[in-house]
Length: 569
Image (cartoon, rainbow, N blue to C red):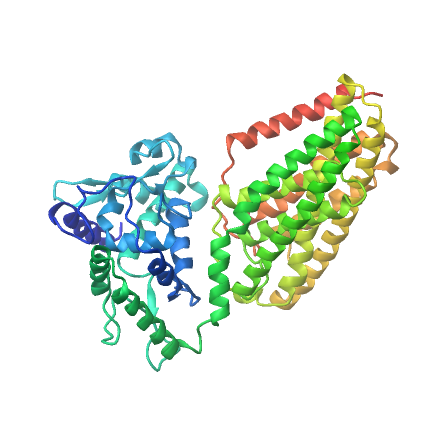
């Protein structure tokens, strides 16, 4: 473990147990469920202060606070504190945050990690639970030996427990880095635009009030209910940034839009909306098939137009992110997932223009699943600067076309699953127009697959041109390239199966169309997270595969086998 971190741990715990009066109020007087809130208007102004991160991006303090809180607790707020209030509180009352359980422990680490970290039923623990006092009166991480052992291994040799130990240690390091002021680099160097900004805590500029004095003024203002002096300090910082950092700081409108984007949290909201609307449409579609109630068409049509409204809202969210980041919002794993979600909904709306039962609901559920992957699997939503190779117009063209194909192919796969379910239901229930529905869905399935294959082929070809421009070779058998080619061959085969007598029929086509999504899953998730290559996002940092996913796979196998034995001739 880093010696600097150990020294800071010792100093912090010394402060915790030996100082009666610290920032704000003492440890004994605090209440777990009653966290102190800074005046809303002041916390909001604090969130507008610009910060330069380690990669050089200038962003509002609110964005920094959200990123830190998401990395540590996997939430956007804690109890009654928003991200701005939490960051201020962390500096103002650090003693509270050493005992408050807000550090998220991942389930991937298993019961062993939960037990040694003393995590509560929600998977949260406190910083103090992660340390133990040694004979030399110094504090040490309770899993330090496990960390050293895990860190010494090759990433591929680490089990889930060891990976989570490393992630948890990173969270601890982030917390102490926050205390050291490494995330509040808010002061540009006068007359030196190219130099990195300095931390407020390490401030030696006489024109700006020291961070320590600012914290003391917060305490006084809370008692006196007068926030004039702290507000004046923030105003001075804003003026200082405008004076010495103006050439590199974003425009006022861009900062305002980023704060607005943070506040809306559009994609998290849509994750639930799509799921609800999707299930309602599918439910009414089944009722429409079973009971022939044409009045239900009116309800489905209304829901269809509601989806259009949220699709526009989804588009608005992508546009906001594009404007803030100044690059197309599909440059990293989080952005690509929310864009695939958009493409899936777009494909569903196009394919269901004349046939509104089932298809809009299917596309909504797939979009919700994709958004849940972005949030439940805790993919980092941070906006980052582009790496040099992605600073190309090909990012907009190639990646957009490839990802669009995933939307159509995902809808095709789920239509195949739905048709298999209809084959099973047709055995147990009399549905007069079941064959007509299966024929319609199969036709839409084939159309969706054809469009998806066309886009995938064009996108792969354009990717080869980009590769030649970037790396001097059209094709290098990179895992992403290889699996894209495999996927093309898989879908070409499925679309031409009807030419083989033994593979004719709607049932066989829908089975294969459903299973074919596996090639896309390997192309996207498998390559990005498990295979080494030029397109890998996070090799060795695999996504969490829950027990629910394994159960779903088993259920799908049962559906395929059962639908084969129970379908009518």
